[in-house]
Length: 143
Image 1 (cartoon, rainbow, N blue to C red):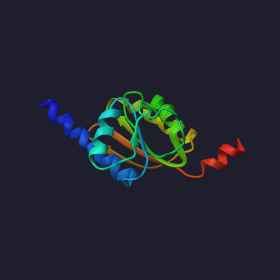
Image 2: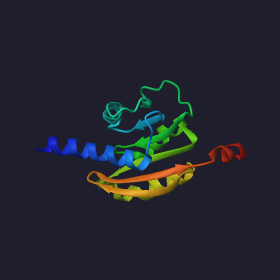
Image 3: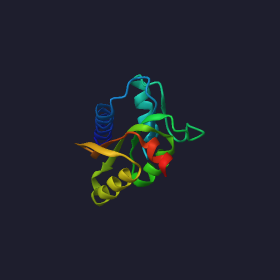
Image 4: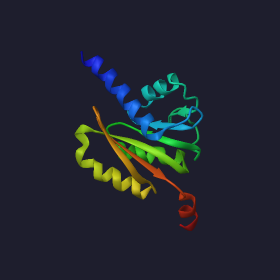
């Protein structure tokens, strides 16, 4: 029975990620975290052609417009995905239920990376934060 719930949870998380980030089938998406390969395969099955993980991308180039972060250590996953994201990107971060105290740390890290939190959605596995980064290229040039 637990296996059925994990499949349903996995589908629900994918549905939430897709609903929040609204990628087109041609948008470049990078996924990082503990379940990145399962999410990668799930998005490929849904018709998304440009999906990658840090393991499948050899060189971190700022070419992905959408980032998806899951796992037990989302702050470390945010640092891992950052070099892959464009200056005008969106990101969705799953904060699992047992990580309630780290949500403020995640929010702070997103703000440090130039993201503005736009929405949050509760799902069976926890809470998904959605944030956008616009015009970070000007900030990088000024720094």
